[in-house]
Amino acid sequence: MPDGSEISLMFGRIAHRYDLANLLLSGGLCTRWTRRLARAAAGHLTGPGAFAVDLATGSGDVAFALARFAPSARICGLDFCEPMLQEAKKRLAAARETTLHAKKEDITAPARITFRHGDCAALPLADASADVVTIAYGVRNLQDRPKGLREIHRVLRPGGSAFILEFSQPARWFSPPYYFYVRHILPTLARAATGDRLAYKYLGDSIATFPPRDKFSRELLDAGFCEVRSTALTLGIVAIHHARKTA
Image (cartoon, rainbow, N blue to C red; front, side):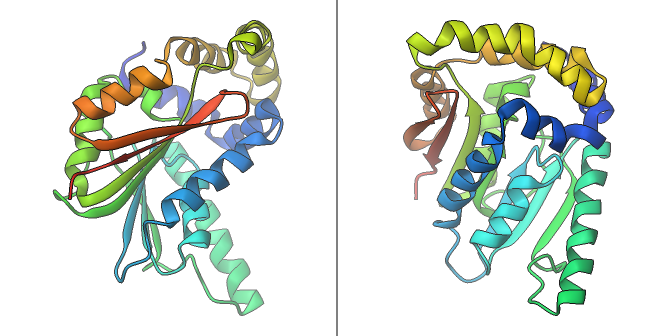
């Protein structure tokens, strides 16, 4: 696996076309997956002063979805790739401008959603400070996954929940065509969309080597979580993992 700085540079190169590439390469399914993640997490953000952290926030898709489904929560999106953060901040500014002209309630107000630099290996957050932590497609890129999972556990309040959306191992019968697509077709399409074939070759390789749901659940338990469960989506292509910190 490339080290953290190489991964940051890789995502920085594709930041300006990242959202378009995701839509194209997933056939639009990524939008549905994000909504499922945000709805699940929002159910745990109902109390006064609820605070959610979205790690590896990228261009902010999950953070914006959380703002819609959890209208009273504060949301902070963290990423260690500055160009991706700039894309998220541009989207936030555009959303504020649209809301201002439409004279609607501003769910993107500074008190509601913010974006800042943060590395999953050393989160700039106090112990037990978040009710919910979300991360989509980012755990797979952690250079030291056990350490990153322990950091997520550290910043959650007792009884808090982590929601992790990640690529997974598909149904056995679907594996051959799926991995043919991931390894051979996806990088070519990605090159057309972003001009960077190597970034998506890495994506395919990292998907193939990520542990199955049961093994990843064991990693979450080893990091200190309890009540770990997972939900497979779209023939097992992705899964949402829910892990709770002991109250």
